[in-house]
Length: 304
Image (cartoon, rainbow, N blue to C red; front, side, top):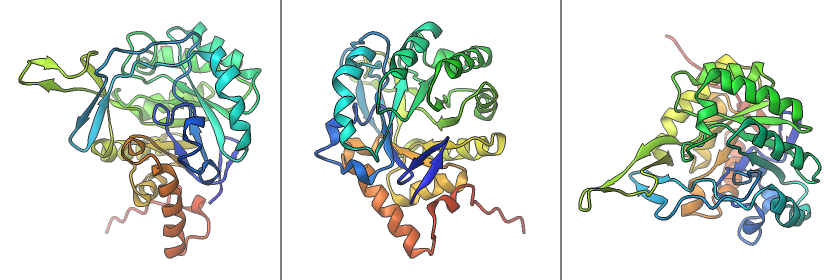
């Protein structure tokens, strides 16, 4: 079940996605953290952020909308209070999702994290659709993305994973820009910009008006984007988008992912990551797959 991702050895390719697993330690009594490859923290900014006012989560057909607004305790509090407890789980890789409104804020977070122990990698959030500054503003503009990734890579003492936005004309193009700028791996995709309206009140259901769509509804699109990106770059890909079952994870691996992230499924089933990890191991056994890494880019396209 081991896979290698940007120089990191993961005990399994199932990772909990940012924004759905808190700071990790909150799940220690729910999920056996040693049974998953790792997790990505919620977005960490230079200063604490309160996020958007409620309601900020809305259920949709086959998914959900969220506009949390990157609520978090800030990098200083994260390093001092949240991170130390995770030393009890050395096999579970801690990937910190890094966010800023400006390039200097991104760099400031990375520089503070560089001095902290117990972190395996950084995930550069250039794709959050739920904030008015930063986030998707970087991920949707090629020159801004290139500049931010190159600056972040120069500042980072750890592997740098860039989390791409699906809200672009060509995700493969943005992936290549990130890879050429120094990204060690890519995460895709983040949520799709969407909205929901209450027809009785004639008001948007989210206070932010729009939010990010996630869950099984986006899986076929996310899968296609992983496939297109795998053809455009050679660096590892973390695939995500609507993964609920082990078979979903296998699809993403075959499309080109080295590992996958499980997000929205954890809202319905807090043990989803562990369940999918166990299911993937069983699937490999029943299909005669000796090494899960062999599934990456294993898609066979027949043109009879």
